[in-house]
Image 1 (cartoon, rainbow, N blue to C red):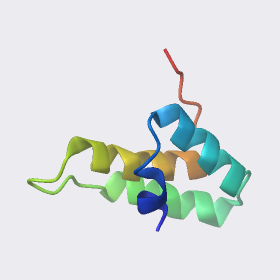
Image 2 (cartoon, rainbow, N blue to C red):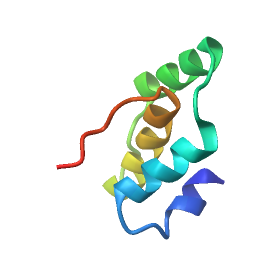
Image 3 (tube, helix red, strand yellow):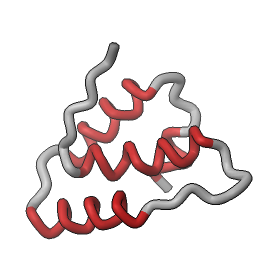
Length: 70
């Protein structure tokens, strides 16, 4: 669901802002699940890198990671 919602957003920054608005601060159990999902993430052969990165960014946002926009 989140992936489809963010597919139309032009930049990673827009995706991160939207995710922050949606999730804000989360408790420890949610953060542990997100970290495990990042550690277990594997890019499927033939899938675009962009889709894989959107999935990872979704999880990083749940962890409240600071992503520097350069």
